Image (cartoon, rainbow, N blue to C red):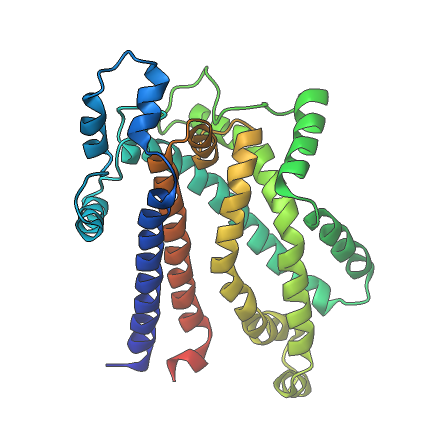
Length: 328
């Protein structure tokens, strides 16, 4: 078996262990809290339900008198079969159906903004490092670092006020307009992109400076390496040296940080979705917190955790392709 495959198997085992730990925490934490979902629903109806229905509700939420290990085993079996429990806020809707309705929008928004910020920040970092001490190098990094210091929600409110309320250039809420029919048609696609512009712009502004500064600093260090000097001495074109020799090695730290950044982008997306009333996981999380919907909060936490772990494993594959040292 090649060392590349062994490397990927080791990384996959690490992520499986991390995922198992996240599932265990997801199971334990709600059971350490006072009360239970059935009592919350019973109190909400204010005596309109019969007391004996509480036991049936506890059964549906997996809160039984069985030993904790048996409850844990039932919980794992439910997770593997796609059963994440029943929502309190949307009772009696299954949590899996509620999360699936908002998961696409969160992945779309977070993925779109992360790809744009990573690509644009990396390219700008390469160009600025190659032409360091220029006007762009003097002006752009401090400005983007300043914007990156703002929290997601503060910048989101500012952008919403300027471009939404004041100038009325972009819509204030929702994922697409009421006048379009969802489907693979151009009006719907344009409406989705139009409504996602401001939320994505907020997340790009906050994270762009980090990618640019990271790529710029690594690129400057790489340009001082001996093999770059040797390539210049051999008369290789500057464009080829910049892209094939310097940028290819300098991009490795950015690739490593890509998977880790997904967690921060998703957390920022949750707040941004709440401000823009975007129908993703952030809006669902807000409703879950308001209604003390622990099953839905657990499901959202688990979804985000496994999305970050999967992204990190894909990044490991990308590093294996770009960095020959990992294949030795």
